[in-house]
Image (cartoon, helix red, strand yellow):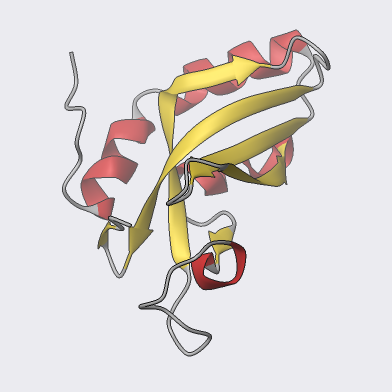
Length: 119
């Protein structure tokens, strides 16, 4: 079993490299068109950004959507001048939505300045 807690963004990206092709093929075969890249905020509320399937590799390599956490959650230590948080998906946590098979929920960890963002 792989590590559950990844201590830096580079290791999280490296973990994804070996799984990207298999997960992408499974999602494409199922007809998924959009990924709901999600993380859980400080209050336990899921936050998400839709990502088109053609950006799957970029998402897995840390080049997908970035979150301005200060604008969507109560994060008092960050403001507009701070850099955004980068999502790195956990490719062991990808679920095709039963209510819409063209979408898949993909849970991600937030990284900020190369390290896990622990809110």
